Length: 334
Ligand code: SAM
Ligand code: SF4
Image (cartoon, rainbow, N blue to C red; front, side):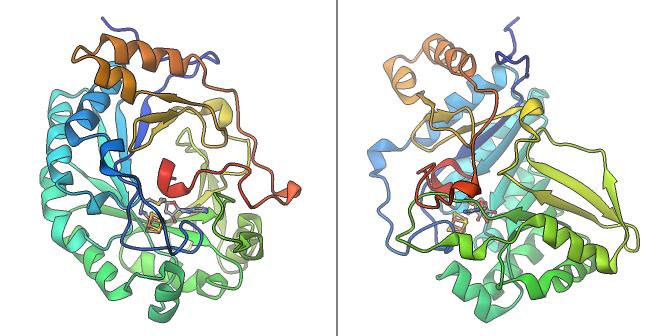
């Protein structure tokens, strides 16, 4: 039997997040510059290569895959990849196949995703105001996303909403978002904005709304009970006693989850990032392309996991928004 992936700090690696494209049909202000230069096609892993790599990880014990981007649903023929991964769901090797999406293409894809075995999806949505939505996504249109969410729920997919908490932007919509999610039976998670990449001088520290403050605001209206549940990632959950709703808080800048970190991130060019907050990565594309036999790539994956660091190193107090970690979220997939 193949030995599972265990890192030097005895953490089993069971969760792989895969960015399948760096492209997107939106240009969210905290994620991308308006004029992005995207990667040439030859740099990208083909769908076949993505399948081979993900299958190798699954063989080595990964049992949860999250597909992300860029916007995963704008990658041409991406359903072929999802359908391919469903064989691992059928065999039981993969327990969960899921995706994070901006929702723009869901009206088209929800039924096929459900048929491929996807059960839960995360949809990113920061505001319910059409004008503000157009502002924050630059190119996005809210009605299209709402239609996508309707289609996902109609297809039987469980939807969780992810909202980036932005000071002075969606502060006033906190309760509206909570109520809207409750009415539609959707969980809701807030994400603290992270300093990623150099977005041409836009200062995201201005928009920084600590989730500590957001939580205090929530507690003015609801009774919050901390839930013990952890995902091995930066999310913590509370239950709102009055509605029974589960609310998540993702604070990627804290170190309080590193000891249980169970995940690594693969970019669309085959770079494996062992930690969201550190620059170290391993190139898996070269060993993948070097031989049709998977032993080289498996050895490269093991060598990479052996380098997984103990924890990450974000720090707002240094006031460096311009590239302390210079990757964009659209590159590593958030
Ligand atoms: N396009 C898809 C989407 O928006 O859901 C998937 C990729 S996107 C990079 C994944 C998540 O990262 C989204 O929920 C987005 O809001 C979040 N994100 C992007 N830039 C961020 C930043 N600077 N800080 C915190 N979250 C960010
Ligand atoms: Fe695109 Fe998602 Fe980044 Fe927005 S957050 S620009 S939707 S990749």
